[in-house]
Image (cartoon, rainbow, N blue to C red; front, side):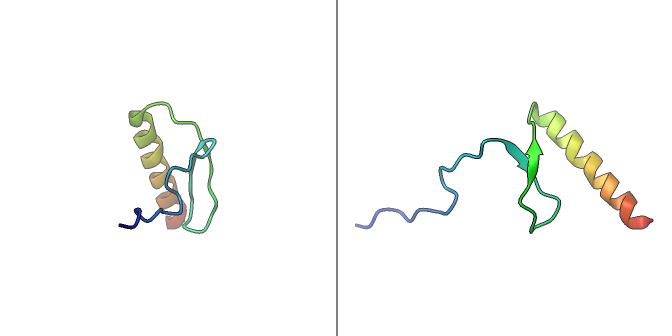
Length: 55
């Protein structure tokens, strides 16, 4: 029996949490504190991007 196939990022830990603005950017650091704060920051960024796109 073959061992399970390993995925490219399986078990790999990054030295920081990060976020991506586009699919191709490599990410910028994000300090994770709480899930609630993460969601609040995410939706604030969504609102900012929408506002920027409407101008």
